[in-house]
Amino acid sequence: MKNKIPLLTLTIFAILLTSCNTTTKKNKVKVGYLPMVSSLTHFVAQANGYYEDEGLEIEANPIKTSNLIAQDLVAGHIDVGIELSIVPLLKQLENSPNAATIFSISNITSENGFDGILVKSNSEFTSLESLSGKKIGVFPGTTAKNSLADIFQTKFPNTQLPAFIELDPALHIQSLERGDIDALFAYEPSLTLGVVKNGFRKISNSIYAMQLSPNPIGIAAINSKWLNDNPETAKAIFKAIDRAVKFIEENPSEARAILAIATKLDDNVASAMNIMPMSLSSNIDFNNLKEYLDILKSIGEIQSIPNPKEICIK
Image (tube, rainbow, N blue to C red):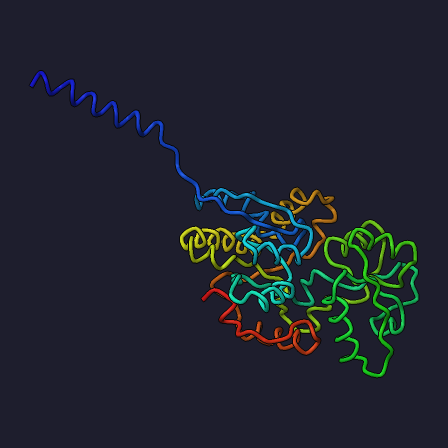
């Protein structure tokens, strides 16, 4: 008995020592995001500790454009993309089928749209139709101008199309202020920044909502190989982002405060901005997505129409 007591004591001591030196292993995830309002779910998940709650260690990489996020996601340089336009991802998938999987889509309406048309406060233009033949500043690439052209051709078929001037986003507000363009097809935060700081006037709500409401142009997606290799970690990502989606819906003021900090926006601008609602990973509207894919094909943005259920998580 005397020989057993020291052995028992040493065993307990060893167990305690081992437990003290053990740290919880976190699953590393490389996330690419746009440093703007569209990535609010990511900012909320970070600020509220949702990633940490799910045992995730996030390597967050701000990426300037949706095109670059789509390229990095398909190439496997990042594991998750939050949030990007669906168009460049679809173009990547035409060359690399099944390389990425969508797990959330936007629900843009005219009431919550992150885009709109701005003019100067003293401008003679009062409606979208009045911009026929005029110069409208748009984001680089084809999606903005093709979508706006589609609206003009559909709603005002007998009018001349505007001239679409592709501009770097950093030049949007100053280009309108200087009079280089007659109007600006602006996205947040430039949309609200132009109104609050520059006194611009909004003459049209969301163009994308005019195309289809709700509009699923914004998506969150995951590299398919990484998803297959790390199914439990992927589920943890979905859960964290789903919690953020619910928080934004239930606490818009708090979400805007998080946005202001994450993007270094003035509180007055952030509090007035529209914030893009996203779907839960379990609630993707495949019929709505199919309608938008049909529109994208009709305006020449994509060459073929994929089956929504084959490019989204089940």
